[in-house]
Length: 80
Image (cartoon, rainbow, N blue to C red; front, top):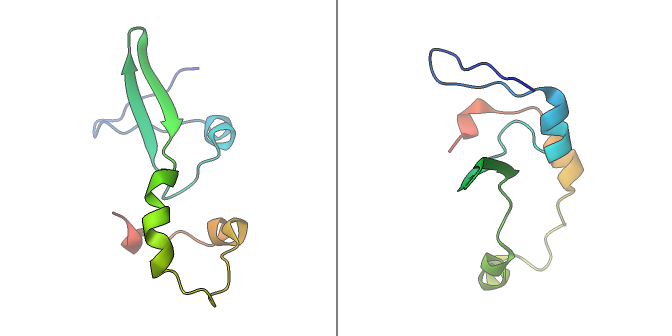
């Protein structure tokens, strides 16, 4: 597969690649340099960070349905 780099150094990946990685608008990708080049993988939440946050979550709060959350329109104003 070949992707083109724009004048702003941006790259558009084919939908099939992003679907296979399970990423969408707002998600982050991680590049890891190896001896043969770079490895591209989705950036996931590190589970070791979750236990210290448990006390900050309201036990009566409804769980979030991640599929519904991800299917909502992307709001560019919420970018990092």
